[in-house]
Length: 318
Ligand SMILES: C[S@@+](CC[C@H](N)C(=O)[O-])C[C@H]1O[C@@H](n2cnc3c(N)ncnc32)[C@H](O)[C@@H]1O
Ligand SMILES: *[C@@H]1O[C@H](CO)[C@@H](O)[C@H](O)[C@H]1NC(C)=O
Image (tube, rainbow, N blue to C red; front, side, top):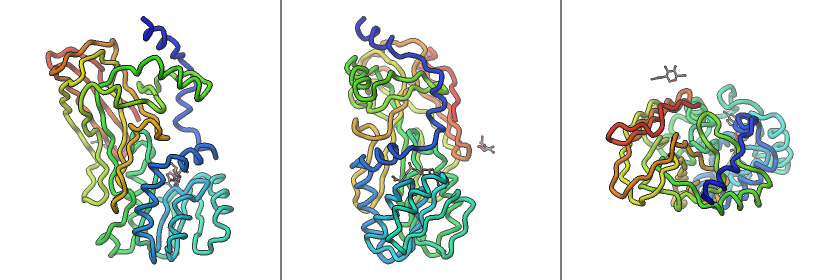
């Protein structure tokens, strides 16, 4: 009952759809930089790969964070591309004392560079990895690469995955902490997904996570249409609240794997709730049919118990 009461506080705000499409604020860029696990993993790979190279920082943000690191570690030339005009202006200010960095405002897809690059660094990853359009942006940026570049590691990160797993609600503490941290209540689901920042994912899992989408830039080709039939075997009996998404980012070069399942991650986790919570026993199977079209990108999932009972009706989101 207490848990139900806590979740009754999930107030349905009407402005939540806006949250996904709004441009990033300076505070957002600072929160990304402050995400130590993420930032240090990118730095590690950049430190290994950037010296002497021409580098494209795709989506440099207001702080020109990765472009600056590449220049500091001896990149010969850095093109820092940013679509958002105010972020690009701020980035240009940040790199003023680094003549080897050139900030270019515009979409990477539409730009020409003065010379081809050897390395692309990009952190355009969403809470579902591909949701901010990284696959198309990067595919189109490949024309900016030197022809020989692909013989060596050319993309940081080299791989990002989105994982899916059946989950229970976090304990009532989660909502209290959330309110204490942000001063606000959780937003309502947007396109069928509830956004849960700093979710203690490991405490909520009812089964081993499975891959929902795999963005593997050092293996060709990257499959644009990924269709999976994910079978989960319940390891933790409990009340199934829905299916949680988290991402992992592999920067390569020995950098530790970054996971948005870590509570301190700046990436929130999304939960696709079931219509009615249902108790699942250890050993029970749950089947989720998923489809990802990375060209959109668009996503689709439907979850059932093997007997046929529908847990989540076919849900499509972008
Ligand atoms: C998540 S932020 C990362 C900022 C910074 N690179 C960092 O790691 O802290 C991604 C940035 O990429 C920009 N962006 C996304 N797609 C882009 C594209 N196709 N061309 C240029 N900028 C893009 C966004 O506007 C945003 O500022
Ligand atoms: C994937 O999305 C693209 C762009 O929206 C569309 O043209 C294509 O037909 C879709 N592919 C499939 C298999 O649905």
